[in-house]
Length: 533
Ligand SMILES: Cc1cc2nc3c(=O)[nH]c(=O)nc-3n(C[C@H](O)[C@H](O)[C@H](O)COP(=O)(O)OP(=O)(O)OC[C@H]3O[C@@H](n4cnc5c(N)ncnc54)[C@H](O)[C@@H]3O)c2cc1C
Image (tube, rainbow, N blue to C red; front, side, top):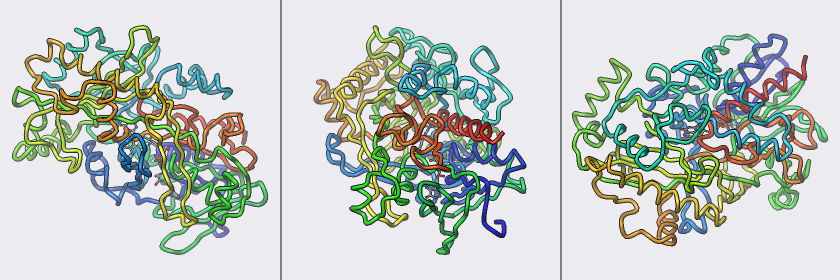
């Protein structure tokens, strides 16, 4: 910390996007940068890919939020895990790497966000990656983020890929390339068997720079504002309040739950809501906390009739010891896997121009409550609609920055979302019924043969589904009256304040969201540095 506690840039949140910004802004030695992170530096298990299953409900590294009771989801509170350490959610996530489809970004541009079309963002996706299988028209090598393909071999994977081909779903060699459609080995943010969070890919190389200060276990309480200009941040470490000033600007990278929370705590948001909490309104901005979307993701389950192919057989008891030894020696096996070794991007109707649903295919079955492997061999397929329309919100319930905001997803409130999920569940059943799966397929136990009609499928989803952990949109980019940031990611009506994280996405990208969040961090850094030139 410098004597005056004044920095050129203050970045709040060291997650997927925040670490990228910390690297690029501090690479220019003219600038001093403060990076504030509520969580700890790291956790000893973070490098081990399978740690995602241990972190999913671990409050040491996870904010462990939950939604308000969801109306169509049997009034359940849906878990909302978010990473809380350097690397943010990229340090606890499932490591699946997906860019999304060109139409996602072209749609963002079509909504009025100049500079965000696929042609605009493709060079950024390219420069940020080091794609292990090799460069081509779509992919690049040499970037900071290592992207590899799952190396694990299993006859079950071969059968699933063959089953896809039998029902017209090709084995796509690169779903981040020319066409997303198909079933294939997953691309992952794993290098040599170890997790590549943005803390590893971006922050580690920058940490020793004298112009970068990193404050961990530092919870931002509110922005400091002078009229309509953001001048800094007030945060707390060990119960001590610290004020830091930003000469140029503050960049919020707290993610889709905490960025809108921090705006509201600072008096930026819906005037009536702020007043109801006793917060003075500094700037009325009705879209703060609105436009929430996520992937609701039911998990289907089958028993597997052949022994020795699922990790229910291979990673329990002595088998687990063997897997631990394999990982320690060769960095492969069960512990080196992402949350899904195979993914599929499917069209629920043949006349669609691009996929509208995604499957995560997992060679084991686990208990939804204990998250432990079941005794019997089984497999899981998680299913979600790529571009849901149902909109929710996130708003503070209190002026205490430690208290979780109210998260309302309103899942399945849109009829298209319900129909697409029903069709995706039926598609997945067709895949599992294909002849190539005959030697492996046992019985479907989730949802099970009694669940057949549309209403029965929706009821089962409502009673059991969780999300794929991809909330976005709560500080949405755009030009309309409910937009929070403009296409330069500057907060409408406030100077010296930008937001760069998943919350700015106008709509959900077609797939897992980490790659898009990193791209947002990269693009924000480009814009900020271009202004300073
Ligand atoms: C369990 C899980 C599994 C996932 N699996 C995948 C996957 O396999 N593939 C994929 O592509 N995506 C996955 N995702 C989603 C992806 O990881 C996120 O979309 C992405 O990491 C979000 O990036 P972000 O920059 O918006 O926020 P985050 O990475 O969440 O970063 C926000 C940071 O801000 C900090 N912060 C918040 N509030 C404050 C405050 N007040 N003061 C100081 N610091 C604060 C947080 O602690 C955190 O470090 C998963 C997410 C989760 C949670």
